[in-house]
Structure formats: structure tokens, C-alpha cells
Image (cartoon, rainbow, N blue to C red):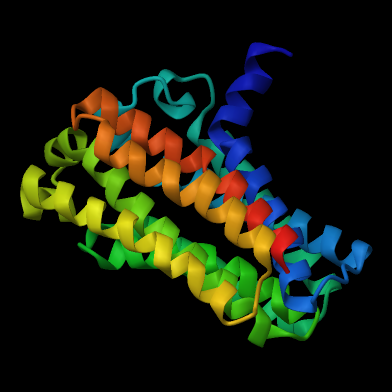
Length: 277
């Protein structure tokens, strides 16, 4: 693989886009009770794949000056990809996402447009507002499940995984903000960890990660998901997360590690929802 292709994939944050597409399959199965119309689901997965790329690339375009201070290895900052090229990638990805979603019907198309608008607003303005930025990102990720439910005309059953995704990603956003606190301060960005300070932020994360365990148990108690959901979600996601929050020191290196851990633990969480329905 050439260095240029590697830089394009880095700009697109391709691993995030792949996760977004996998969420669609999980969401469709959860909403439909097990039936997955493969063609329609695959089309929607591709749509979410390209929408995520649009979100990531546009974010780098908007944040290029901030990244010059904080993330000097990003493709736009190191000059491996020009802003014009990045703009072309972002707009092409947005067009492909919308075009693909239209194949799945007007209801799906309308929801994808709604999320695309939220992504644009987040990247250009909402990220500047404390708490609103965290809630917006978490809401957008939860909406992938809602869109998946709309595909099989069963939004009702897409709500539980959407709420789980919202909670988990809100918690992850706080951890990410804490790991980025120095760079945000230099860039004039205010975040929850900056307002609360290290001690209160640590307490908040401990509380959120602790209550994530009973939060995950609710769908099992309500007979929405089965035992495999409970076992996998608690044993391989919530418990390791809570242990990591307690054990790791809150140095910059450990916070970056914790942020990466939360990303990895999304996989067993998605697997739990997929197998538990």
C-alpha cells in the first residue's frame, strides 16, 4: 500500500467508518428481531460508511488550524493531502451516502439527511459549546440504530440499542475531552473536564462507568435481549471499562490509553447486542 493511500485512509479514519457500517447490521438485526434483508442493509451500511468519512474529513478541514498545534501528524497538517483534495473527498463521500440511502426509501433518506445536517453543524459550530458538543456526537451515533430500525420499519425496537450507544459514547466523549484538555486549552476550546477539573472529572467518569453496568442490565430484565447479551456486554465491555477507569492513573498517557480502550470495547458491546436479540 502506497504512502498516499495510507494518508487518505488516515484522513478518512477508515476504522471508524468500518465500525459505523457494522453498527447498521447490528441495528437492523436488533430492530427486526433477527431478520436481516441483506441487500438493503448492505446499502445502508455503505451509506453510513461514507457519511462517517464525510464527518471525519470535514472535521479535519474545519480543525486544521487547531491540529497544527495539537495533531501535527494529521494528513492536512503535514501536507500529504491538500485542503482542496480533502474537500473533494468530503463532498464525494456525502453525495455517495445520500445517494445510497435514497435506494433504501424516503424515510431512510430523510433521516440520513437529518444526521448529515447535524454532522455539519457539529463540525462547524456545535463543538464549541460545552456539553452540547458531547450530547450531539452521542445522539448522532445513537441515530445510526434509529436509521437501521427505519430500514425494517421497526424504530421501536431500535430505541434500546440507540440509548445504549448514546450513554456509552457520551461517557467516551468525556474521556476523550480529558485526554485532549491541553490541546483544547491552547485552542481556546472549553470542555467539561476543563470546567470540572481533574478530581471531579475523575469522579464523573467513575460514576458513569459504574452505572453503565446496571444500565446494560435493563434490556435483559425487560426481556428485550437474552442471556448472551448480558454475559458479553457486562463481562467483556462494562466490567473491563470500570476496571480500567479505576486502575489507570489519570496522566495524559493513561487517558489516551483509556480513550483507546473505550474504542476497542465497542466491539464486544456491538457483538452483545447482535447476539442478544
